[in-house]
Image (cartoon, rainbow, N blue to C red):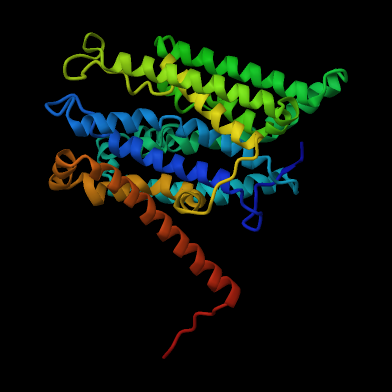
Amino acid sequence: MNAVPSSPTPATERNLYIDALRGWSIFGVVCIHFAGSFVTSDSFAWSPSFLLGLALNQGFIFAVPLFVFLSGLLASSSRREVSLADYYRGRFRRIVVPYLVASLAAFFLLNHYLAWLDLHYAGRRAVWLLERLLLKGVEPTFYFIPMILQLYLLQPLFKALPRWLNRLSPALTTDRAALGLMAFFLALHVTLGVLCNRNVLDYYVWGRPNGLFWAFYFFAGLHFESVRHAVTPRLARAGRAIALLAAGLAVVWNFSMIFDIDVVGGSFERNRLDYAYVRPEMLIYDLAVVAILATGLLLGSTARRGLATYVGRFTLEIYLWHIIVLYYGAWRYAGAIASCRELPELIVVLAASATLLIAFAADGWYRLKDFVRHHRLRLVRVG
């Protein structure tokens, strides 16, 4: 296990369908966080802005599972072998450095340093920083980065497991071994989800930020070729129809619970939206939607170039910076929030604007770096 497939390089031909999925998903993440902030338990509960925020928040909840699946899929797409050290070095440069920069910005610009200063002992402050950088995120929405890094650290092991099982039992093909391991990780995902939902396990330790909880999606993406070999187009279409039915039933189940005043309270004060990924109805919904979209890969679905495919090229940058952009562009201004409550459509407009603004800025930054690199500009001191 001293060599692993490298990640796709910028020169790799892009799959527009995957870029479109990434683009819609990252817009969905922005909607989850911005629109979700209008799902309150105060006097605005059940208002139009509340209902739109709730619909966007719940409708796009599949975005994170889809990102984990696509991360595994893209990690397996390159056939160029690199050393393990070079692989981890590339992950550090591509993900960890931007994550640390965004965490530093959030620490000060979103006032998280105030909570840190309230800790009066150096040891507690050190633990606070380590816990948030390595597990929870300095900004709570950053939990995804430590979680996906856990999976990238495990990627060489995940990649090799089917081959090891094949060597132990030659009668077991690598494809069958991969499919069997997918079933194991699916069972683990559901088991952890059920235990977290019942508060047997801490959701904020064993659920949302835990790589083991998400391992099924990553492993399924990493070994998606084994699924291709096992699933015929006819079976894929039948599976998509079943998944579509399951997703629809899960939506009905979810909203029947959400709109039950006896369950959530008259002001929505007893809602369990924080348990987003382990509530049974959402566990089913996420699995079904990712399955539906994955069948597009099996059936050769394509997408046209457009805003979704463009935005899909800058998902990391949008994920890391959208909270700061939304805070300084909307959240901190009472007038902006009031306008969104009066005209709920502005919620979508602001979420889309933040998404595009960061994508344009990231694109410009990378183009500038390429220009400097290709033309070998030298800065000289004048005078």
